[in-house]
Image (tube, rainbow, N blue to C red; front, side, top):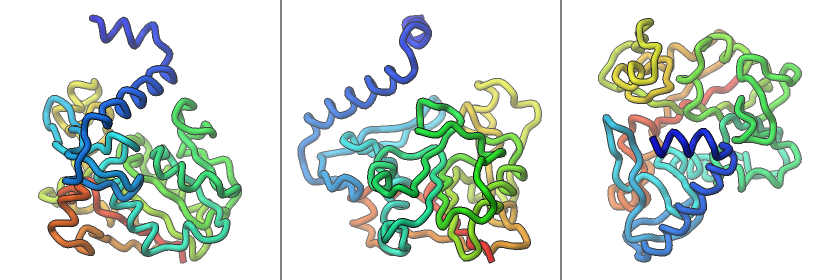
Length: 254
């Protein structure tokens, strides 16, 4: 009841700011060096938990910058393996993670976009991207596609605006034990989707066929488990996840 009143009376943008302030306040109580965030280079005794009624992931969220397991791994890959931080490439970043956005926003050719104007500077529908063909050198689309009803239209738009030779990075929640993606047409309410897919706002739960689903004739897809570039101790200290949310799918447009 109190939560419902809070959400109804306090604007979403202000709620987001309050959430960030509270998280940073918690970071003061977590001094230590057991965990390390490569995104903000801060160390803590632990990270914050993240999850819902079906799952709670311990040591998932950096209390300082808010990075998740997948954010930290994606940042490490982009920094170490790509030229995204070099020069001024054209970049499209959907549903931007705050810490990644902060590292890219100085580039005048960087565009952060979201259908919700409270999450990005540019309000944009991923199925109707307002840019010309072959415009972007890099596109980041992490944990977005599984929320989109018209998956094929979103993919067609992303590949349309990606330059030839450009790189697009997908990440998603995936059930590696399932051979095929699971979609239940009866799961329309938030609680039904939570029970079916593990999150209230998913349209599907991807399986091992994810790479095939995003493969179009003009692109090459590479599946990257970047966690293998680090030792077990490094993966634990940076909390890089178990692979269900952290596999990087690199798409290059030919």
